[in-house]
Every structure is written in structure tokens, then in C-alpha cells.
Length: 89
View 1 (tube, rainbow, N blue to C red):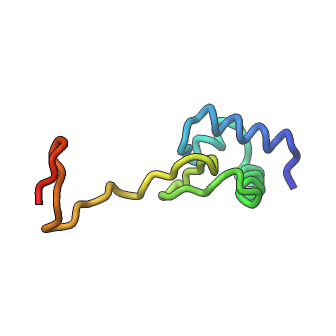
View 2 (cartoon, rainbow, N blue to C red):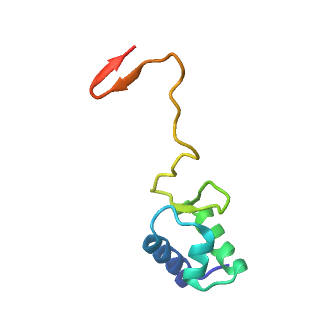
């Protein structure tokens, strides 16, 4: 089980890296092996402090952060569109 210092170090590194932070970059910044990194991250996820992100490298974000969508939202065909401040139907 990770100690409080490791939990704090992870959160500080996450804040410094920006959100979302890719796991390999964050792990390298901390200088931790994969087992330690995953254990600390799992503890923070279990406590609801960090949320696992999306993507191949499983970025992580603070639970108060916003996880960006996997792809930009698409406009449905035939629906209204907005141009400037006007709605076109």
C-alpha cells in the first residue's frame, strides 16, 4: 500500500504535467517503476481522487477535471446547425 508521501508526489506530478497526463510521461517524471506507479494510481482511483482517462496510454486526470471525449462530437445529418449566433434548420 502506498504511503502518503507517494500519494502526494503523484498528485503534484499530475498537477505539474497538466491534465490529462499520459501514464508513461507521468511515470517517467516520478522516476518510478511500473508496479509502484500503478499501485499509487490505483489507490488514488479507489479514493476517488483520480479518474482513469481514455486512450491507449490511459491518461489520468484529477476527479475534479474533465475527461475529454475520445473524438470530437459529430453533428447529426439533417439536424439544425448553428452559424455565428443564428440557428439554421
